[in-house]
Length: 361
Image (cartoon, rainbow, N blue to C red; front, top):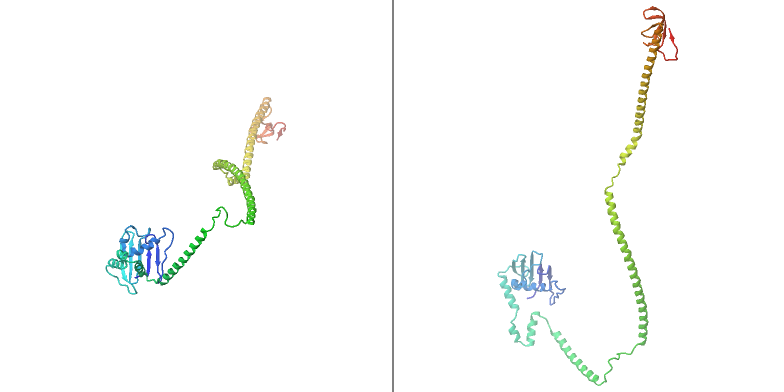
């Protein structure tokens, strides 16, 4: 009985593998540490023995997965064993081939199968070397005839080589011992000269490297000095920037549009103001002229009355209620006789301003 196919999912460190061995071939399982090599081998024993093979593996399901599965095809039987993350396990054994039939008591069947594949170690120790080798090699069904012949040939060849070693040792013991300080081969002077020239060139190169390193070291020191100054300047600028930003937060921009509207309306406003000033000036002037007229009228009335009084004192003429010429009730007298009611042959008006002369009718 042999493994036809092994398929594993989420078992221990394995995510998913499928192995299908070829006829009479050896499957090599390799990889770095902790990559699942041992897990791949453990799957075979876990499929056959279940919990008995996992006493040191409390969690066979890969971390993060919900379940694990191993399907082992042995040709005659197909073993399928599942584990859940909660700790449950399920075993199914079916017959191989196209038509698979589920078998009862699957674990008992697997235990008997494993017992057939094992041998008694006590009986094995009582066998000779050849019998033990045959017992170990028989399950593999390998023909070792060619390998045995190759081993015999190598054995005979090794004996011949050992004889040559014995003769060489005897010849070596007959020769005087050489100075261990001497070189094994003659000194190659040409090679030494080339080595010397190469050493001189290397020395020059190393001197240039050292000089360049010193220069770079000085440049680095100067650059670090400049960097410190620049960093100090950056810190100062940060402080100034903070102050400027604080001041900028207080800035209130003028309402340019409102000012422009005021500028546009300033001409009309000024014209209205000028007109208002002119009106006030004219009103003030009119008031003053009116007051002046009233004063002059009062002065004229006083003067006329004085004239009337003077004329009346000398008994000349008769005072009229209203002048027929200027319609003034002051300073009008009649001269001559009265012809009709309100009419006189001659009138004189004393209500006119001084210097204009008298008006007669």
